[in-house]
Image (cartoon, rainbow, N blue to C red; front, side):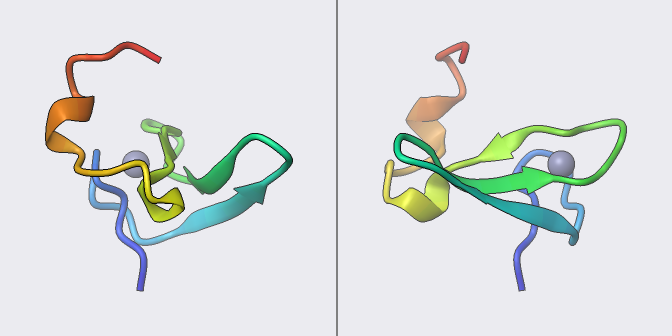
Length: 51
Ligand SMILES: [Zn+2]
């Protein structure tokens, strides 16, 4: 089961195209994109980079 790494919400929408592959959080107050499933790496060194 997927959990949003930002808010912990359990519902996400799988999104995939030629460049992006991940899960979009369906929490209306979050709505962030989790691409950790694409093998980007750890989320720890991801926090400082604004998308
Ligand atoms: Zn979320």
